[in-house]
Image 1 (cartoon, helix red, strand yellow):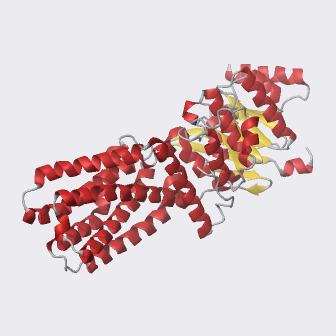
Image 2 (cartoon, rainbow over the protein chains, first blue to last red):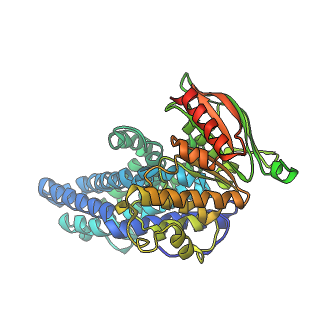
Length: 241
Length: 238
C-alpha cells in the first residue's frame, strides 16, 4: 500500500468520496495480493462448478441453448456469493469497521470502495471462468460479434446489480451468526429481477444472434440504478446501527 | 482552572445508554478537563467501556449530551476529533504496522512523512514491516496508541491502555501520557491498576452499576492522591 495524497475525506465533495473509496480499494487489494484467499476460492469454485455442469448437462447443441443461460448465471451468483462472504472479513477482525466509522471516512466511500472490490473480484472470476464454460458448451459457435457484445453488456449489468445488493448486506450481516447462510437467503430474492432479465437476455442471444435484447438491458440498467441509489442512501444509517 | 483550560474541556451531561431493556449507563454527568488525566474506574460491568464507546462516538447514547470546547458534539464529530484506544485495536492484522499507520494518515488527511518517527517513538521500527497479526499483545497495544499519534487528536480516550504491556512498555506509556498532558490534551483512561491511576490521574470518575458513584479531583500531593485512589478502589471496586 502506498501513501495517498493527503486531503480531507469528510468535506462532502465527490472528490473526497472517490478518494475514500480508492483508499478502501487499495487497502483490500494489498490484503488480497498478500493472501489471495478470496480470488483463489472464487476461481476454484467457479471452475469446478463449470466442470461439474459441463459433465452433467452437456447433451447436444439444442440443449446447450436451454441450459447455458441458467448455468452461467448460477455460476456467477454462487461464486460471487463466496466473495461477498469474505468481503468484510478484514473489517471484522479487531473491530476495524468500528475504527473506519470513527474516522473521517464517509460511510458511503466505504460502501463504494467495497463495491469496487467485489466488482473486480467477480469480474476477474468471470473473465477466467466464462470462456471455459463457453468452450465446454460450444457457446462460441452460437455467437457473433454483435451478440457477444450484447451478452457481455448483460453479464456486466447483472454482475453490477448483484454486487450492489450483495455488498450492502455483506456489511449489514457482518456480526450475525451464520451470515454465510443468511447472505444468499437475503440477497437472492432481492436480485431476482436482474437475474431473470439476465437469463432471458442470455437465452435470447444464444437462440438467435440477431435477437433484440435492448428492453432487457434497459430494465437491468434501471434496476442497477435503483439498487445503487438505495444502497448509497441507506448504507450510512444501516451500518452505524 | 483557567479560562483557556475550561474552553478545551469535554463536558458530559446526563449521558445514558441502554442495551435492549438493560440500562448500562445512567445519567452520567462529569467533566474531562484539558491538560489533565481523568481516570474512569469501576468494577467489571460498571459501564466504563460503554462510557468510552459513547464518548468516542462508536455508539450513540440513549440520552445525554457531550460538549467539547463549549460546543455540543455529534457521534460523527467525536469520531473525527477524539482518539480512542479500545479493547479492540482497530488494526488490520494482514497489514504491517507501517501500512496500518499509512492508512490512518490517509483517512485523517495527514502526511506520512512523520511515520518513521512515530514508529520509532512506539518502539516498532524493527517490526514495522511485519504483519500485525504476528505481533504480541503489547506490540499491538503500542501500535494502537501509535494510530492516535498519527492524527494527534485533542482528546484521548484510553480504555485499559496498559493491557498487555510489560514493565518497560508501561513506563513508556506513562511517559507518553505525561507528554499528552504537557501538550494540553484531554486524557481519559480506565484502568484496574491503582498504581497507574495514582501515578497519572488528577481527576477521577467512579462508576458503579452504570451510575456515577463519585467524581472529583484528586489531591495535588502525590502521597495523598495515592491514598485517595486506594480508598476509592477499596470502597467501590474491592
